[in-house]
Image 1 (cartoon, rainbow, N blue to C red):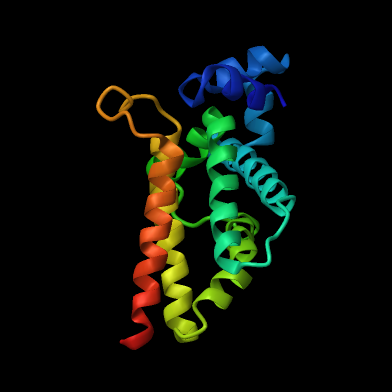
Image 2: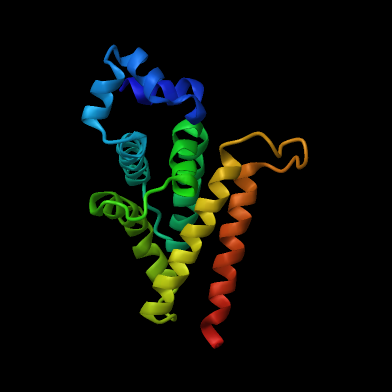
Length: 186
């Protein structure tokens, strides 16, 4: 909990074993007895973030339109990321810079379960696309949203562009969905 609070309040760059030890009242040695390294600690924190996102998206009230549901899930994702910027940046930056070669199965399952929320609506909208192509299309969508999520966690580009971040994400999603609908005749 202390590490989570450190990240929420100060950002991912602030999280070190020493600062975690100070905030929790434990020694650095005790921290490393519990977690073999900081990557292990960060994965544990990221799994909590994934659980929170899963719960948040799971609470969204479905619409009768699968297309509207996809947009609703996007809005939920964007709202969650922007509300939890520092925790999400920890998640995002871990995937870009950690030395972890193989993620634990439990971690991967949490990632996959997030796409499972979108899957029924995605399958309904794109039933004209084969199962393999639809799975690939959904993975590409998630990778795109994951990449966009870094944009949501920082104000660095706000001076360059005065676009609303949620609008940019909606445009990405809906342009992508329209392109997939065009595959109907292909």
